[in-house]
Length: 450
Image (cartoon, rainbow, N blue to C red; front, side, top):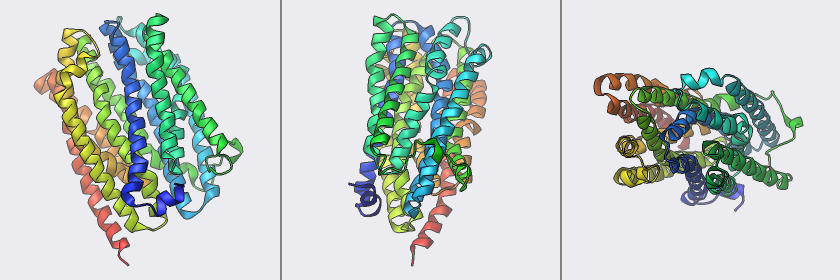
């Protein structure tokens, strides 16, 4: 099915499923390969190396923020350009998104390496974890920033043209390769944590190569321009891409700040507590990945029909996305809650870490349905080009509510209170997102009526 058929004429449920399922699968595989580092390093039996991965994860996750800044912002504008039939602006949007992302990624990787002596201790690294953190950051961020960002960004841009399956295949390729390479580099080459990081970097390089080949082969039919001559700062492209993509980037950036705060509070108790929350957060990423995949998958369908003024089809897509997201997120929450013990034990054979991990996982996973609602609403606003609402919701969900609650709950309830700050913040963000969404939905209903 070509993109025009998918966006304009296919039954809405079928269109949503065709776009969402590959995206969810690729997101889950991405989570699995992120978890693979923690899992295989955990088999070494050293809580300090597991803790180091947890401490470095916010700096690595920020690369996803950069990919979302240029990928989601670019994808939203490209899908709206296609709905309006403006292919020239779509090509220039792609070129701007790709080449600006390359430059920013290079700068971020270099700066983080040069300032590692200041950044890593500030993130919670101590004498037992500092060298492990340095090794992990060198491979995944200093050397791996550009391929990590491009791999995810290309997936967003390819999906904007309706090629969700191909985009998801590229993301899945990197994840599967990482899972295969991790034990080889960690155990066979005896590189331990550095091996896990090198495997991650190499997997993203290969996945980026897949997208470059895919785009080159579709050069006659795609609007994703790799030629830097198409790069443009005109037509309002930078403003539109950056302002629409900024909420997703800020969510990741504030997620970095939130995780650093969490680790700093946890490390005051023990490295086992840091390792336990690291495992719990990694596992909970499955729920977040489902919500992210559901929302990002349907973004081009909503944006295309909004730009084409087919409000009836757009609203049907939104309703279907909400229903599927809530059902899947609720099922994921039940699974993670009931299976917390065996899941955490699979990561590390350390009784204290397991005790912390399974308790933390049961607390965090209950936020799944709240996240599904908030993420879907943020993506709806992004798909139609809204800037203020997704920005506000992104800042509330990460940083605006959870960080103050971490300090408050730590003072009131100790280590368990720190973890309870996450569900409290996500519930609050969901209430605000619904309050913003209802007036928008009523406005769409008025536009839909002839």
